[in-house]
Amino acid sequence: MVEEKKENRSRKGLTFCLVVIIILVSLYMLQRLLMPKYMTGIVEGAMIAEYYEEEHDHDVVFIGDCEVYENFTPALLWEEYGINSYIRGSAQQLIWQSYYLLEETLKYETPDVIIFNILSMKYNVPQNEAYNRMTLDGMKWSKSKIDSINASMMSDEKFLDYVFPILRYHTRITELERDDFKYIFHKDKVTFNGYYMRVDEKPAENVPKGRPLADYSFGETAYEYLDKMTALCKEKGVQLVLIKAPSLYPYWYDQWEVQMEEYAKANDLVYINFLELIEECGLDFTTDTYDGGLHLNLSGAQKTTKWLGEYLTKELGMQSRRGEEPLETVWEQKLADYYTEIDRQTKEWQEKQNGGEK
Image 1 (cartoon, one colour):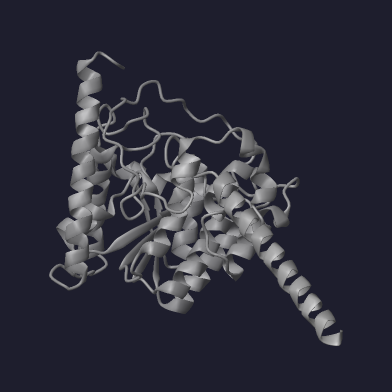
Image 2 (cartoon, rainbow, N blue to C red):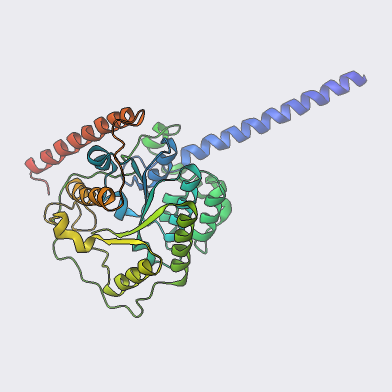
């Protein structure tokens, strides 16, 4: 009788464990199904996670918003200068998010140069949950991700929703599309070492001028994280290069420019404003942008990348790694994929033009 009771308790315990496992697996599967996949349309939410699939041996890592991932192309830096680079970019990446991405990156690798685009200095407080998610959901769990979430959350967001995204995305159950099932276990790459390619053209016309601001000073929080970024790079022996990409809009005020020039000088940093180098780079905003001047297309990105490649090699003394294995073989395949995508997009764009679409 005693043995029978023990056996019954054992069976109940085993049944309970199996039920718990089934529930947890089901919730995990449901969560993967409900989370946005970012494979078509708005693909920017898939960018951050792609970094973890890389071999972490980069000479240069870009960090920032769309002004890096659409305006510079690592493939050209490798092909012409032998510089192995990656862009850790995401849409409206705020400066504290950039800092924690930098902090995380430096745990994986120690590049020679970090390039940070300073447009996000204009933001001093969290802005938008949807953009937060495009940066934060793709990060692997670490103290850097936890700190970034806490710094980024809007007043109506909850930390637990990031730990268990199913709490945030459960309402998508009625909005599921084919991609949600197709990409439940894997995702295609949407970038080329972080670069988001567009070959189509839309000339910049009637670009709006900036409206006068009540206060042109960057905020305390923005400066706090720029200071942290500067200090961390110096601690790790990495050269921090600040840049302002040549996007015509959002407007970059002269007063902002003065603040960045003074900060760079005070902290012995390189600062490059590509808005002042448009002619030197050979940029033509009738053909080198795909959205009227907000971002560059492939043609424009190649021009800014060539200028940057010359600067990195001639001014910062970076050496070519062409011929180094296994890097050479890895890039051989990456370049093949890169040019295949150029051909595909070019053909698609030409067909639209020939069809009279605008």
